[in-house]
Image (cartoon, rainbow, N blue to C red; front, side, top):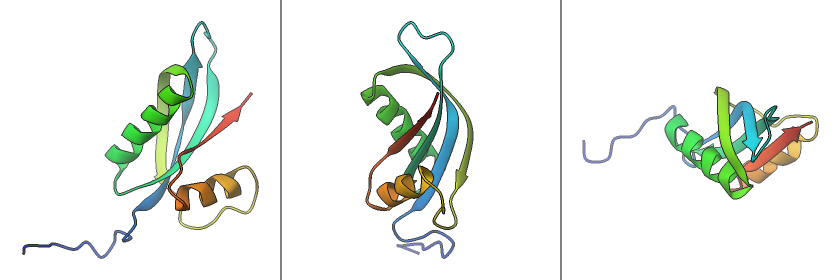
Length: 96
C-alpha cells in the first residue's frame, strides 16, 4: 500500500488534553496546567505542548497524563480551549 489509511484517526488529527505541572524560573511549586491541542499522535502533541510552554516562559514541565477529547466540553475554560485546538492553537489553562 502506497498510502495506508487508518480509519480510526480523524483526518485533521485528534484533540489532546495533557495534564501536568509547569515551572517558571525560580518557581519551586509550579503551576498546574491543562494543555489542549490538535495533533496527529501523542508524540507530536507532547512535543508541541512543550514548545508552547517554553514560548510562555516555562523552563520545566512534568507532564502526567495525556488523552484525547471525544466531544466538546460544556464548561469554561475547557470549552474555549477546545475551540482553540480545533482552530490550530495550543491552549494552556493555568490553575493557581
